[in-house]
Image (cartoon, rainbow, N blue to C red):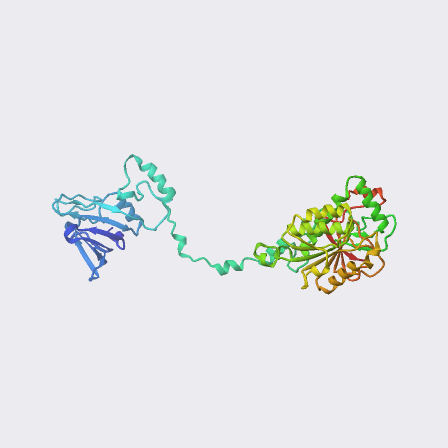
Length: 475
């Protein structure tokens, strides 16, 4: 049975004089008690000869690095001999029969110690017999009372796991099995031809209805776009970006609405503050918003010229200028000198004087170069004769020649062409039927409650949504 060991890899320790040899077993001679290794290595260096033969008396220790046959594993691991049938022995020691097969020639020899480092690949560990041992740490063979436990460990962990590692994974073949069109059609709710997969749940094919992420799955009532109705038509209608209709109202109805709101606590001062906040927010947006008003642009602070008259509309403009100055905008307020002014004007001027804004009473003191924005609050709803005043004409002429865009706050309905050509107009609460030419109309929320609208005969639903200032479009 010496042929069972042929091809196994062994390590032979011949002592400190001859050193260590490793190689593949090429032959075992039972008669002369020799073993030969092909392609040997001596102390880790390949030998210059193709084969080396060792006598049993030179071998101090033999280790199996790789056993090629199951029968060899069984015999060697059971400790019944060295190199299967041939007995490799150390000199000067008594011999013994490794398998009872033949007697040793040297009566003073014993078997050299064996260490099995790795088993061969022949069969699954689940088919091992009771005498088959598993590798042991530090080269110690199985045996003793723990054999049953070690056998169970071998059955669990001793299976050869290297059998399937020689086959490379075929990425192209597996990628060809992936039908991208079918997968994305399921995600998008479409079939492979691009048609929408629609149907009722539990339909003919039993497939549920599929919806896009921006589709509403709840049934809703039809949208009513005319949510604001007025007792009498004001002459013009506007619509918001979402399509809601906003009718205009006459100045008389608008005046009644503000008076009713004032009776319920929305005083003139509160209305001025709300108008100033909304107008300043719109002006800041027109000036560039966050792209212009940043700490890095302190050297390019926008300049706004504010033209105001001695009336409530002028007070609204002063309130707007105060908020703009608080937001680091350079504000220049033009207000002519009058012997007596309204209380709302004097109160707003007192607050404005606490800001960094400037105030001038002469057109000559206004900037000669173009400013970033002109805010026009010269006109009054009640007194149309102001348009004939010298200061009014001079201020309107300066605004038209400055070449800066103009925002008009709460302009009146005069039936005449506006003295200052505005690019934008801002109405309060509900728009008036303005003849603003090319000016774009905006509407601001000044905080009038819904029931106050109802008191003056207006059926009102807020068109502002999440904003306080919205654009209006002529219908």
